[in-house]
Each structure stands twice: as C-alpha cells, then as structure tokens.
Length: 128
Image (tube, rainbow, N blue to C red):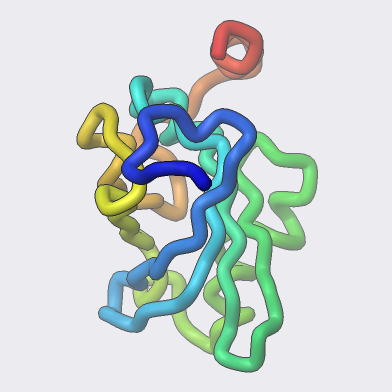
C-alpha cells in the first residue's frame, strides 16, 4: 500500500474533482504532473474529464495532433457549455501529493499563458 501524500507522480495518474470556471464540478484523471516543475506541468499535464453519464473526454493540448477534435472548444461543447463557462479548469491535488504549489494547485487555461515553440517543447519533453 502506498502512503500519501506522494512526492513523485511519475508513471501515476490522479483521480480528482475538477472545477469549471462557472463553478460546476466534474470528475477527472490527471497525468504527466511534475510535482517539482510547474512549467513542465503547465504544458504537458494530461486531462480526462467525465460527464455525469460517465462518458470521458480527453482534452488535447495546443501541441497535440488531435487539437482540432479534442481541444478546448470541443471540450466545452461536450459538456453543453460555452468555453468561458469551462475554462480555466482548476484542480487541487494537495491531499495526495506534495511539491511546488503551482503544480499542486493549478488552473488549466484554454490556451497556455505562453505557448512554447516546437524546439522549446522538444527540449522540455526530453529533459523532463
């Protein structure tokens, strides 16, 4: 049995409650969280959200190949909401993980505050 909170989420997923901008809460699964590098987390966190009927939606990030079919606009439509009702999505995994506060409690914006170019993304992906 693993003890919580953990200080490393490598090869782990976290089930948690996510909150939309309008205050609605949904269940979700997070992965690719670097507890010691909030910038890495901002660009690479993977997020699957669940509707009340149990149907999942995997949110594509700006650098993902399926951004046109699973991006922020499609996520909002999946929940029958406008994009401003959904984003930013917030989470707090402080009950199960310890690390840099900006990786533990974050907002996931429809678009990152600063987009990385392809070279920056590749450097970050291989260094992380």
